[in-house]
Image (cartoon, rainbow, N blue to C red; front, side):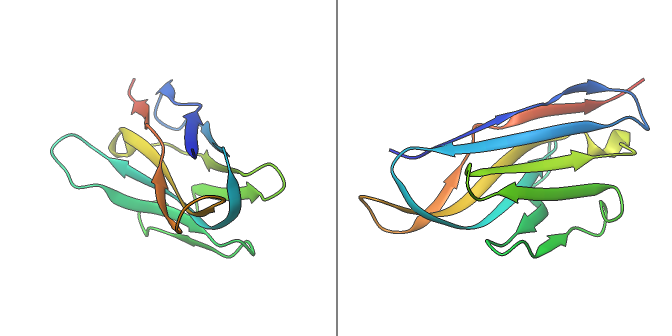
Length: 120
């Protein structure tokens, strides 16, 4: 069974920084694109950042220049470094990965989410 586990959320003041991590575990044959999504109360889930297996990245306009995503393919992990945080960044952040398990068909797997709150 494949699992994605996020860590690193919390409460931070505006202008502060947080680093989120996501680790994939289980019977994994390959991991393709990985990404971070967020969902604020009353809003739809939105893509924040994505990274291919070769390291190409893409970001939502709202976070460009402030957030950076990276991955370690050897450890099956992806991180999201968030700087210059704003109150509007407050949301539950989810990790998603396109995974080929060792025992099933390729598909999208999601983490459980981690709360990020930006407030003074």
